[in-house]
Image (cartoon, rainbow, N blue to C red; front, side, top):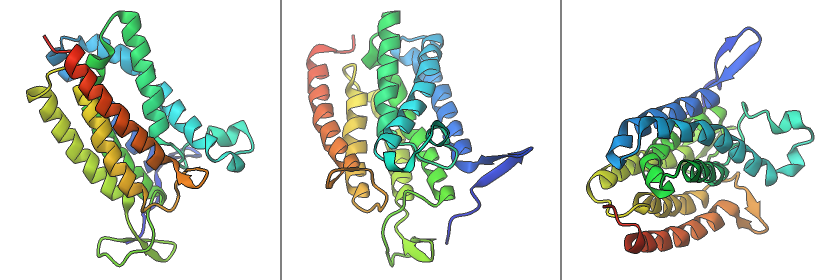
Length: 247
């Protein structure tokens, strides 16, 4: 099975790609679900929407700039940099910039940032699960050759569908974190920390299969960031459990 037509539909002379449609749908759904769950954290829907208004554009900008930073040799003009319809968003950049934006909004509104992020982060995992299918339509973010029956055809070669591995993991992560946040969370930041640990473990191993990784010297940057995120998330979980208990 190869990847299908990446074009979802056209508006005049503008081609709208599945990549953008799926990412936009995932983000919209994440915002809606976060707003619906806001009351469980004593946060208003308006607070979630205010944070989302900054999170979404800054997150997308961060995801693009992060990707471009590690592929500067392929970008020769601002037009190339901002042409994201054909792909080229790095989730780690989106998370770093997006989380920073939420923290800034929360500090301005005098809301506990960790509490807000606990509301949002399970739904971020759902958005990732949906958005990864944009990579399928673009024929990107795949692994190396495989003989496994669920392999996909790319340029005449059967390869690991690493987008699928991550999509399934993130979908399971969404259900688990939603359950945990509702039934087991005892401190602000625990749900965020569990996301950081569990997503990073998956990303470290799936990244080993990918053939289009961004690099830091001889190392795959996603694996380096994943290790750092796991350590930071473990420290956050332990610290929050001692100092940010839910009352």
